[in-house]
Image (cartoon, rainbow, N blue to C red; front, top):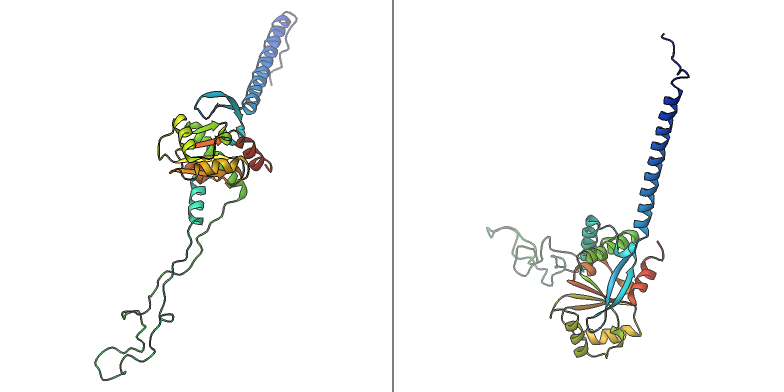
Length: 261
């Protein structure tokens, strides 16, 4: 085994320089890691800002939207699953036909068993006869599917985030102050740049109070759907060309969907 060489006194300054350089490199690495960590924290704390429009279509300010709801990661697989579950739950499953035991008719034997040359039959209500029962027809069934509460909530957040990304979400203030007349609401939509017969989802804070005035003025407009903030779902948010959120409804959405997170 070769003997280990230890640095002599002449080589000590070189060793000290190398040690200082390594220490500086370690400090730089630590600083870089700290800067990256701080940037990640800043990104997580940052909030979304959106313009607030009045009933005349003018921008009157900005409002901060909760990052967890309107800036969530868009999960397309979860969105498609939520849509499928919602549509399946709309099916009634009440289609039903009568079989041979449920059809009203005689129980007399069609013809005698032997001697006619024809096939033997015992009932006029058999499926092969006119006005007989239906073989293998539809029966009442349950088409409903289920999503967990957490998945439904996350799907709703993904739907809101996709609307923000596509610039199909608008915050409006002052809708509760207009007269509860359809004509006035139609004029407000025109001022906001909304086309006639366009599919719109209007989100209100809750039922009662300002909700009633907005509901009365917008319920007869073709293509407009009005939902309170506590009964929202991913399908309704995605199934419209534009989502209008009343400014007061943002806090209601927070209270209803971030309370139990």
